Length: 428
Ligand code: GLU
Image 1: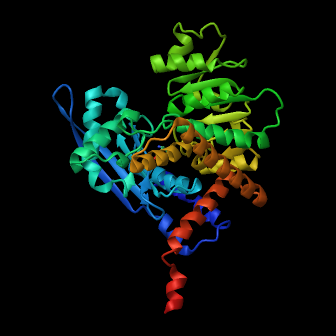
Image 2: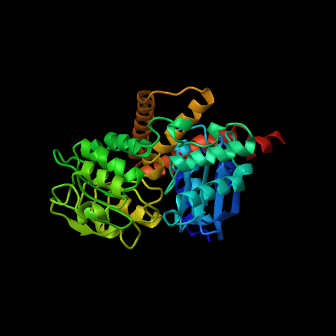
Image 3: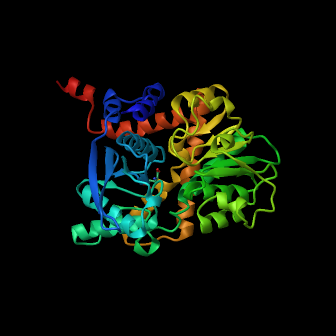
């Protein structure tokens, strides 16, 4: 165990050189506060009983309640959930939310379950972790392969357990159950605002800017739509089944329409759709990552670009909409080559930022307009993107190291507010 986690926390030492924090802060950040492992018995539609494995890690809550999504995927492990919870701790500090970091996951292929089985699994998971979450303790949200309806079931189940309605226990809910306008597109919106802020500093392509998006789920699809609408030529997109590519650019609204209807990208160009007139190649995910584009957006899972594939990457700018798509070794190689990587802890922080807005609205009992949500999101994302850019350029470090240094300083302030080793040593 601990491969991903060890790799992920390694950057703390590098960032330390650029943040003035106590040893206590580093100590606090190297260990999760709690890691809960639960088994979830689920009655299947055929009458049989199956048990699924679930996890919830509260990594850190120094700056506020832990915050982070719940992922459903067949490859979920405790090591992965713990790493994602660590990244959430950093992410929430990077965009200055009053939260720590947490994450949950269930080892399951959700596509293999019926709707009723999925609902029983989701409610069963909440039964298992109810004592470890709460509006002031740890607030879950959607992540890979979970969505608003699932968050609705989970909020309802938690409310049943507590015997009163608790909308602020979870974010990313359906609007009718206390969700926020703009939460569904927030991850991509945030990534787009950051891209718009930083691309002019990185890409001096004058007219045409090309982009490729790996992963066509909630984040990747909306990001592709936004880039297309902003005038980027999106030459390729892919999902877990593979991708499509054409140098003249894909008509993203049509691809998205068919994807929303058919739910699989391979149906988009290859099985008689609105787009099949366009001449295109069918490509693999690895081929997409190696395309010669200005902007590459990995928006799927961890470890998309590794030390074995990094030499093939030709993009000039990479915006990490997924969590952890580039391994630490590959990241170092990209920095060496001058490729600008906008790290996940900034690039995809739009999701948790609007989750925070949703939590605030739930606590106020008052719903904001879509415009208010968008304006506040844009302001926060562009402010933090500019701040990190200036810091990174000043010190000639990567945006990732700058983001971790920024997060360390903010977390460090909270840790030291209750005293650190020197405070107690000098007090005798
Ligand atoms: N799962 C998303 C992330 O990785 C959102 C988390 C949240 O909204 O709490 O940032």
